[in-house]
Image 1: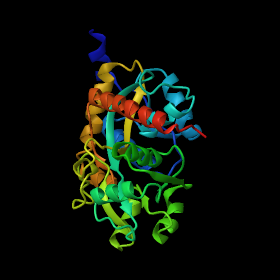
Image 2 (image 1 turned 45 degrees about the vertical axis):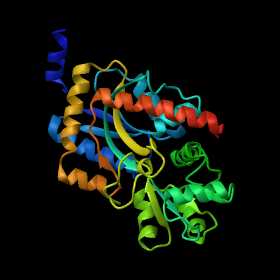
Image 3 (image 1 turned 135 degrees about the horizontal axis):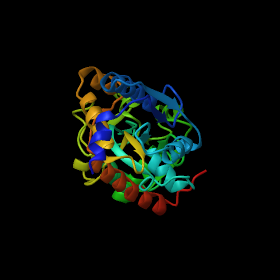
Image 4 (image 1 turned 90 degrees about the horizontal axis):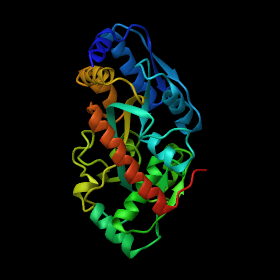
Length: 306
């Protein structure tokens, strides 16, 4: 028992690798590099971002899971690391093979609707969809994407019938959404905001449990007749299973401190994200609830990895 405090006090003594299982330049990479830069300053050792894209994030996740559990290999994960494992034969288990450190951020989606559909809020949309089954299409960024799963969760929790139209990213979906050929979508707030402000799409609700700071006047689905609805794209830090508790707690404290800095908060806000900074136990519980929720959605909708 005396070894753990000593280990924490001497940690780190060399550079730390932060694996990002996606390509450089995306939202996860931007947040990871911000975390790495600030952690380098706080820990006195370089935190190096190592992009390992491929196989839906499985390559980077497998590298992390198989690394020595000594605090020198960490990973930035997203909600997709859970859903990908459920849809594919992933070489890792999201609950068993990692040590949760902290959830860094959460980014809600926004339910948008073409103005031609006669619904001013989520309640009216649900009523309209029930009276017109199969007449409303919803766009996603691809089959099996978190936006696709969000749509399927909305269907199962409201009992409406919607037609899923997958695209290769939400940017490809906007022309059809703006033309009214696809009436509904769940884009990120940042990508949807220009079309909401122009009046070309109507924001009915956000998908997080509470309201989003970026759209404070738009209710959450949870408070708009879909109680319990809660979906966010989140990013969090993990280590390999077996990482010493003292190191996990030290890293959590350091990252949580970063999330109070105005400059970093502003960086996340530009991407529509909000800081979290949960404890390891809270983050583990969140991952467990995500696993249960999306496992049920994937099974009910019979979604298969392509």
